[in-house]
Image 1 (cartoon, chains in turn green, blue):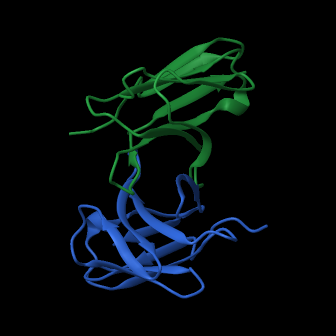
Image 2: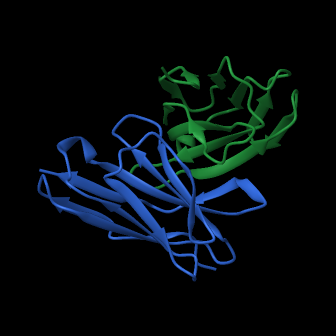
Amino acid sequence: TQLLEQSPQFLSIQEGENLTVYCNSSSVFSSLQWYRQEPGEGPVLLVTVVTGGEVKKLKRLTFQFGDARKDSSLHITAAQPGDTGLYLCAGEMDSSYKLIFGSGTRLLVRP
Amino acid sequence: DAGVTQSPTHLIKTRGQQVTLRCSPKSGHDTVSWYQQALGQGPQFIFQYYEEEERQRGNFPDRFSGHQFPNYSSELNVNALLLGDSALYLCASSLIQLNTEAFFGQGTRLTVV
C-alpha cells in the first residue's frame, strides 16, 4: 500500500496550458517536499512545506500543503517544454528520518 | 561547490555477486541516506547514516548494509544479488538539523543479470 498517492500518474499537455498534480495520504506529515527528476538523474528539490495551509510560489509553480498536513498540490501555470519530467512528492513523519515518496507524476509538455 | 557525487554511474552484476556503491555528500553535510528506485516507482528508503552509525533502516533485508566514514562519505553494500535488486540507487545528503532539505546524487544504475 502506497502511503502517498499521486495523481495523475501521467499527464501530457500542450505548451501554455495549466495543470495541477495532487499528493494525498491518510497520514499526517510533519513536512512535505516536491522534487523533479529527469531521466538518468537524481531528484532535485523544488520546495519544502511544513505548515498546514502553507502556500509557496516558485515562479510559475505554486505549492500548497493541506490544512491537516495530509495532502499537497503542485500547480503549474503556462507550462513549458522545460517543465517536462517526473514530479515526486515526499513526506517526513514525526519521529522518523526517512522520506516517504509517492510514485510520481510523469509530465510531458508538448511544444 | 560539488553536490552529491555517486560512483559508479552504471554497473552490471551477475546474480549472487556482491556490489559496493559509493557516495560523497554535499560539502558541509553530515547525514547520508540511501534509496532504491525501481523503474516507474518513487524512491524507497533503505537506511540513513549519521556519525558513522545507522540511524534508521527501511524495510530491506540484511543483504543490504552500509557504512559511513569519518569524512561523511558512505558506501552501500548489497550481497547475494537478486534480479529484483536491479534499480537506480540514490544517495541523498543533508544536515542533521535540516533533514528535510535532502540533496540527491545522480544515482547508480545497477543491473543484475
